[in-house]
Image 1: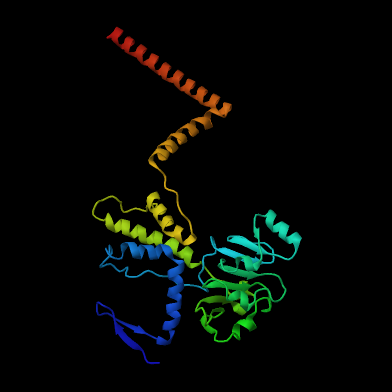
Image 2: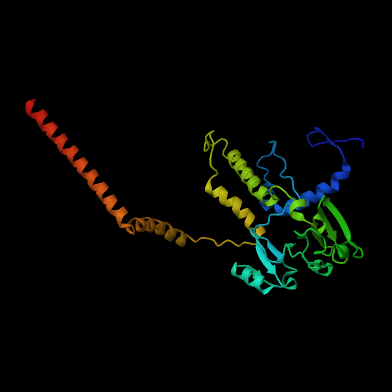
Length: 322
């Protein structure tokens, strides 16, 4: 294919090697925009003022691997109990012993129909067949992820999904396909065609993790640029100030469904006093530590007294012989 030469707003030429990849790029951006709330919030908050106008930073983005989904904070359904971690997990089980083990580990145990329309990620681990059927997948939320860690694709009804009348399949990238149902126009994402996804879809950092990192960098650059003439920041390595770190965290809370309680002024003052009292309590609760501090101050007082007496004697001696 011949190269298409376009120009930027400043007139600089750039080349698009293969325009057939445009749809793939759009899908990558769509996924990144959902999974990078911090960067999107920066764009919303600072887009109009353009604080870095004229600088080389003109766009925000990252490479998305597989789905790029941040697992932490999502609701995941594991069909069949085993070792799971990192996500708010709901278990489906047929074995009462496995079910009680899951409950004792702190996991919720429900049927698939109870949670089918609420969860973000569905993982089958049973080694059995017909665990998630196409009728279940039609009820899932848009862009729910369906995958298996079984070697065969019969845990997930892949045949029913692929042959569903009017189904539209979009290959986002190898091992990552989005299936759109014709009646709802909502889709699900299937990994590794329903087979062993933990080998077929091994990835690097999720987009959400990269969003936290990139937002830190952007907020730090904005702070440095804003204070470039004030002399506030020396030309040394700085630790990101706590208030900026808190801002980055706050920009990501909404994506995880969190609502932060605001600290009132009275509680803030009370908390500050409490920290002081806590420090005092930590000393008084340990008698050995308290005795050690008392002895230390007594020794210091004796040394200072001895120095003071010696100094007075020296002055009197000098005055007497002068």
